[in-house]
Image (cartoon, rainbow, N blue to C red; front, side):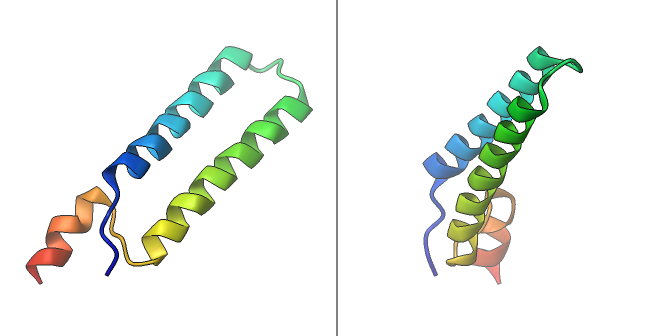
Length: 69
């Protein structure tokens, strides 16, 4: 099983926070193209994290549970 990379998870979480903050700053008047680009960035960040997870790593909340079984 792959070892969970906390730095990668932290980077993913930071990217989520950044995208959320950007959406809040853009507000309801944001151009659709800007929203589409942000959605694509979010999907790519999630895809990369899920690739790590499905390769055998576990998210921090379940890492201890998996090790104790």
